[in-house]
Length: 275
Length: 256
Image (cartoon, rainbow over all chains, first blue to last red; front, side):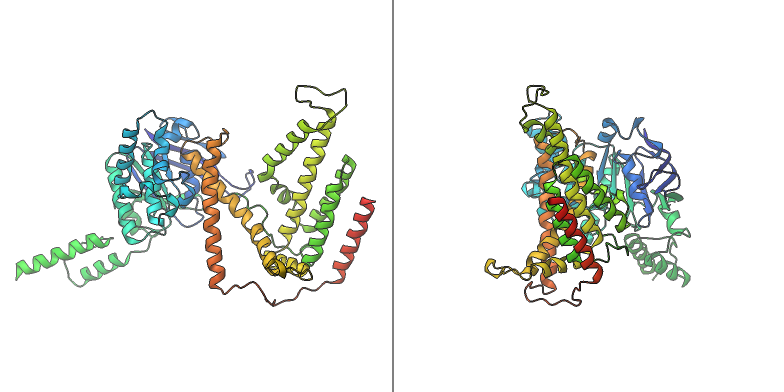
C-alpha cells in the first residue's frame, strides 16, 4: 500500500520535449504510514508534484498510482485528502459544520453519527466545537487551515497532503497544527508536507526530500537534511554547538527549541547534583 | 499555473504605443460594426481586421484566443438560444424545437459577434497597462457633466479598470475552488444546481474579501477620487490621429 510515482515529467507550458519541465522524470515511493517532508524553493516543483498524488494534474509522462489505483481515479481520490495553501478557496459550505459534513453526508450515516464525526474531526485538529456554526469565511487564517484539515479528516483519508501548511500561521496555531499532524500520524495516516521552509518541530527522523529544478536532489531524514550542504544550521543548533565547544557536555545535533531546553535543564540538574 | 486571461502583456509594438484614447475609440467604433454585422462576409471582414491588429500587437493569436476560454459556456448558450428561438418560414426546419438552417446561420453569426467583441476587448486590455487605460477612460469622460450623478469621471474610470483587473483574479479563484472540489470528490463536469452553489458561495466570498482588502489599501493610500492630477498628461501623436482617421473611414464604409 503506497503512492508510487514512476518516471513522472510535467510541464505547464507547451507539451513538447523542449519546453521547460516543472517535473523531470521524478521517481518516488511513499509507503503507507510514512511522514514525508518535501522541501524546496518556490518554483522547485513541490506543489506540482503533490498535485499529482490526488490526480489534480496528469503527468505528461510516467504514471502515479495510489494503492494500486491510478491517481486520477475516483477510488484513489477518496484515499488522498489535500490541504491547499490558501484554505479560503477550499470551503464551500455555509457553516464549518456543512463543510466538514460534506464528505460524510452522502455515506448513509444518521445525523447523530454525523454530529459525532464532526466533533471528532474538530477535536482532532484542536478546534473548539463552538465554531461549527460559524461561516468558515469568518475564521482567522489559522482557524481556517485547521477547519479545512478537519473537513478532510471527516472523509477518513489514508494519505493527507499539506501544501505550505505553516505559512501565515501564528505560533499558537502552528503548534496546534504540529500537534494535530503528530496525532494523525500516530493513528496510521500518511502525512505528506510540502514546504519551502524547514521546521524542526516536525519529527526529526521523518523522511525528507529536497526538490530543485523539478528533480529530487536530496533524500534522507530531516536530521540528515539539516546537516547536509543543502541546509543552513538553525540558530538553536549553532548555539548548542558553541556551548559544546566551550566544554559543556551537550549533544551537538539539536535542532529545535524544546529539545535544546530539555538538554539545558539536564545540564543544570547535573551541576546541582555535582555541587 | 493557469494562464491569466485579460492581463496586460508589455511589448513595444505599434498597438502598445498608441494613446489609450485612440484604442478605446477604435474599439467602440469596431463594436458598432460588430453589432451591425449580419452576414458571414461582414464577420470575415471584421475577423481580418482583428488579425491585422493582433499581428501589429505582436502578442500572438493564441494569446487573444485564450481569453475566449472562460466564455465558452456563454457562447454555447447564445448559440443554442439563437437556434431554438429563431423564427423561420423555411421548409427545412426539423424537430419539435423548430431547428432550422436559418436558425443555425443566425446562431453562428451572433456567437461570432460576441467572439469578436471579446477578442477586440482582449486586444485593448493586453496592450494597455491598467493605469494608462484608467487615464484614457478618465480623459474621455472628462467633458461629460457627471457631477449630478455624484461621481467624477475619474471614479468611473477607476471602477472600470478595477473590474477588468479583477477578472483574471476571479477566474483564478474559481480554478482554485474547482481544484479543491475535485480533491474532495466533486465532479465539476457533472452539472447540478448544488454544484453551482458550491462554486458561487466561495467565489462571492473571495470577491468580497478582495474588494474589502483593495478598498482598505486605497483608503490607506489616501485615495479620494475627485480632483486628481496626473504625473503624465496623455498626448495624442500623429500616428494616433492617422489610426483614428483610418478607423473612422473603415467604420463609415462598413456601415453605409
